Length: 69
Image (tube, rainbow, N blue to C red; front, side, top):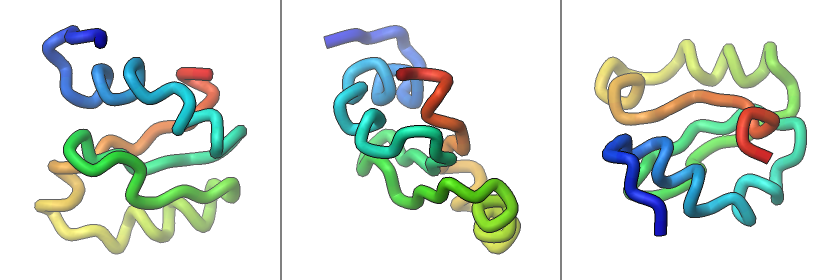
């Protein structure tokens, strides 16, 4: 198990198989829960992200799966 001290990076590095389930997709990751939202369409994902509360924006990492797989 990788422990970099960054909970988001740790989740990604330790769950590459999960990320591979969403090829070429945008994902929102909660390091305690995992992937909470995914979408292959950037506009749709951005619209979803704009609707997040400040607390959710602080809690989630929004990224693209190509960064990790």
